[in-house]
Amino acid sequence: MNIRLVREKDFTTLVHIFKRNTPEYFGVNEIGHFEKYLRELKLNSSESYFVMEENKIITGSAGYYIYEEDKLAAITWIFFHPNYHGRGMGKMLVDFLMEKVRETKRVSQIRVRTSQKAYRFFERSDFNSHGLKRISGLKDSISMKCG
Image (tube, rainbow, N blue to C red; front, top):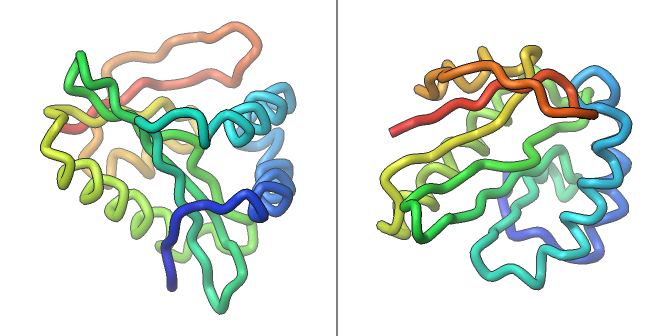
């Protein structure tokens, strides 16, 4: 297993994997949001986005961004190719991201917005739910925090 920073040449593969997770985990309308995120990623120095590979094949991805003024980090856009669901890769990637965030020593809390379908996954990584919120046009989401 290898975790590395995303490269521009990964974007097409990531969008393909993202689409494989719709509509079960993401709303179809979120594809465009994710594509925009990837295009703008290199413009934002407070964000880091990673891919996980197995035998040089991208299996999934996730990232984080930091809100300096709030001493808050947020995990964002975590997903895996359906063939790799349930193999512990998500936990490995979340643990990796949490360690990277802690290394910055700039945050006191880590948050994630996730769906009703995936929130138990984050509970196993010590995230606590603090409310369900409905975001227009998106899947039902739960905002969670750790720390």
